[in-house]
Length: 151
Image 1 (cartoon, rainbow, N blue to C red):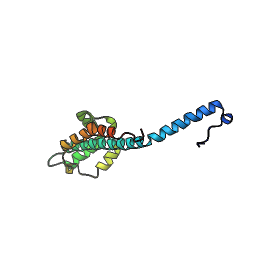
Image 2 (tube, rainbow, N blue to C red; image 1 turned 120 degrees about the vertical axis):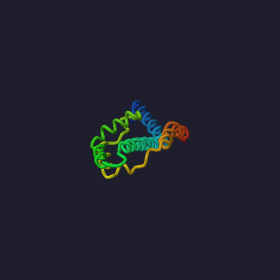
Image 3 (cartoon, one colour; image 1 turned 135 degrees about the vertical axis):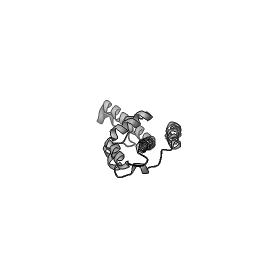
Image 4 (cartoon, rainbow, N blue to C red; image 1 turned 45 degrees about the vertical axis):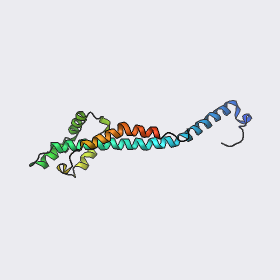
């Protein structure tokens, strides 16, 4: 156990003492890293959610542009929902997005079925640019500022 008393080498032997000291140093190192890892985890989750929001915006914008202006909206919407895998690929190619960032197609299809695609707002390029700036510049700067306070 960890305490202030010296290790009884006669009880654990020289290898046991060395192993114990290594384990003790590893534990102390892990304890010092806890604040940094907690902060990194929160920032990574935030980045993941921001990228997901951007992808969703591109998908919805693409689907909205595929909708007719006047007649046959229900039929076109159903075709888009039925062929959602193809629509995802089109969005992925058009905007050069990582396939792994896209949502689960079946879940997206289920949720999208209860909405009217033509009612969604148009994509605002300034908002996409703001997300890109945040991910490319602001988050890295934020990570630099949140160094481990125990270093």
